[in-house]
Image (cartoon, rainbow, N blue to C red):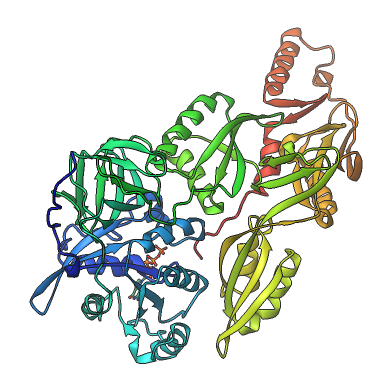
Length: 614
Ligand SMILES: Nc1nc2c(ncn2[C@@H]2O[C@H](COP(=O)(O)OP(=O)(O)OP(=O)(O)O)[C@@H](O)[C@H]2O)c(=O)[nH]1
């Protein structure tokens, strides 16, 4: 039954401060977070493992934060003990939506900038998200222990950006701990206490949801109104599903069960849900007996933006691959997949990802945690095709691109922000021009650093854009982008044919201007990779029925018995056997025998090069 009067929450809202640290990759967010855990005493020296908050191995190895988490830290100011909830945000563009939900759970954000690097693209992107969520921003320069640090210079940049005085920028070193206690004091002073209605029906926003092998799904929430108690029934408002709250508590940073979570509090819920997709980021948790009528704003289904086919190199790994994907899905709400088959690669799955980094992480986890050897097809974006008779087709796989009369093709576009020293303006413009970008604006952050804003097709970014940007700016430019709807574009499907038979894995959708160069590149590459056959094999690139490039593999007659002239029969038989075995690893495309390695080689050199660190 409904609770008559709300119990007082464990911590009064006026003693709570909810904040995030936002920073460009590598600017020292995890190090600073670790230092705060240590200073507030929630983790002692011995337990301290570098980057306590990043739990997954891959996260620790790559030094990136993928899933966010929250930690509660006690901190005393002027004799009063406050509960500081630090909500960790993922630092990569693929996870913008998760960042925005983590920020929505806070009242304040520490904007951390490396004092030797200055503002970077993700500093800006995160700052804009924080401003959209109306957070109080505390500007902080980090790594002031570095000899190369220029805190004064970057304090001016930062002050100009957020409209404060350079003196307002705090200066810290996460590494040595210098200035970190002063920062904690400022968090208490500047970040507003949460406000909410303790008497209203409970409403809590899910800002993260992680899968734990032992406990099932652990859902992290920020309570806005009312209170949640253990053992009561809750409803998830987007799906209207009900669950019993088996456990409720706070992370400190190990889970500590509590008697409830009240207004402004941040903690975790365990409901016995097995799959994170039932407990989605952005959704609202309410009380089943006394439900809220309106869900909190901002819920969004995670939408895959980039698709790629994943195939086991060894065909017998298809079953294990399916099982592995089923398992990963439990902890990754954004991963989607469905079976597909390919002439060239056999049976596999077409998988959808939030972006390239997401793709790489999933692939790496499949290979590492499940011991699978995989080949992935070149990543592509989602196209919306309208036919002349007005039928709509959504294309997630180039081989599904319709023939016939097409009225228009729409492709997703992004708003990209790049930051770089001014000397690279020309190089960046040239690159964006090549990638069909259009300049939206440009601003000088200081005398020698510019912010350039472009609209670019997502498809042009998913290949090697980031690598190109880095190499053309000697590593100085940074990039961030956000989906920005779609646009009509002159796109065509290029097929690669072997002796007239299309090879599905090589079909691609490109801008008409680039079709020719793709055709020449792919046919040239395959000519080198496919062994000669007993007949001539034309390799062609085609748009529909129109051939745009062609190479030839000339015929040979491979007579394995030639060397055994008049020789003994058993040796002949052995050679024939061996030839037969070799053929097993061959795939037939029409009459042409192609070793699987050739497909793999042709695809891997085009493999995605994502946004890795450095
Ligand atoms: N000298 C110095 N180095 C620091 C400081 N803080 C962090 N670093 C170093 O900077 C690098 C990046 O630090 P991280 O804390 O991993 O950066 P991050 O922002 O959490 O990175 P992501 O999780 O990838 O976003 C590491 O090599 C740290 O040792 C500091 O105050 N001084």
